[in-house]
Length: 506
Image (tube, rainbow, N blue to C red; front, top):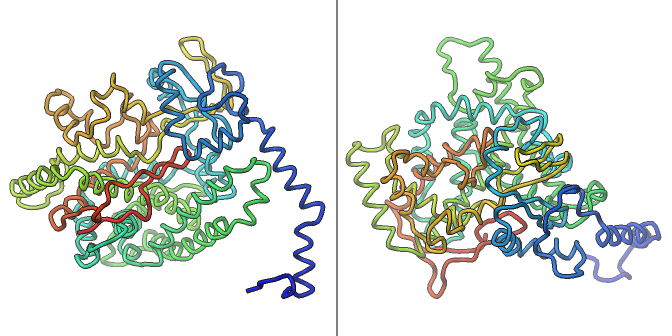
């Protein structure tokens, strides 16, 4: 390693000097000026709404910088003052319009070519740089999840249980950073249902799915610090950006041969051929046009894992943290699991649906620690006029403050109290009990989105969470290390996660 300028070769010295040539200094100066004078109104121009979280005379970029760690405070302040009207919050990459929940019912069914979730996803994730622009080319994976996998969800119970039982080992649970351990277990269970048995035990594939997502989000969070006009240039210097593309190439290298083999088997089946039952097969069978290209199918499969692995592992991690903090629920949930298994004679295809207390506990855990503070995210591709006469200009990026809605006393009585059986009681006293299920979305609970484009994998996630949590509860006691309590949430912009280094003991 070089320790001084004296150790530099002539070639290295010239390279070092080039970094400080006038053109690079000019570029750095341009970035600095654009940060100070950048236009934060671009995504909400034309809408007269109060801006929250900004101190008097504070430059917009400083407000956006504080939003990275204080987003929960900014949104809470805005919702408490303006919950029945729209307001704006400042992210470093622009303003976001926060709409009242009363608009959701009117907007939830607006077609994609007017209000687009996919366009906003690609916009927020800097699609061309992070390879997520594939979402604009096809929604095959979402359609197959919704139309093929979810209707036959019960067919995946036995294989998911087998994967959980084979991968959860007693010896690894003495003292651990639980989210890291759960990542690979969850990745294996999801891969079994999404891509089949050839990959679910392959460490290289599981690592590829996990590392791709982690580096993609790291790239997004870094790029949000800078104006979009410099993103292409800056991304070339980001190791996380290089690694994202590396793992995409590796994913295709691992998956394309499997896809090609399945296409061959499908067109020219040999005697005794059994059609695989997983999302990948549904995608191959449902693909048309360019979607039939093996490389595109592999890329879309990676998008499924991008959406599912980390959010599911975070949900189970939060649930275990909540169990450690509220130990009285151990007995409640274990008694329910044992009673249901005894009545059903073991795990059956629909046994997980009868774990209603666990369903309630997971929903309450998610209320306190959702994957994101904002939901029902859309961008207006065309101008829209609401029934109230308010016009939403084309290009407007808007969301709802989904976590704050669930902490509104008018929506949730005693919202600051963790009540693991809250939704169980509501369900038991309602003629429409399904409305209180973990995977149900409505005008107040939008952690999985809302409308036609609500998360298509939420029912599979609900099943997986119950199977995994039940297995853990029947085999382990978790607790926080001595002298510690529930770890704080890691909140960056609108994203919420457990602290990666937080430990539990068993």
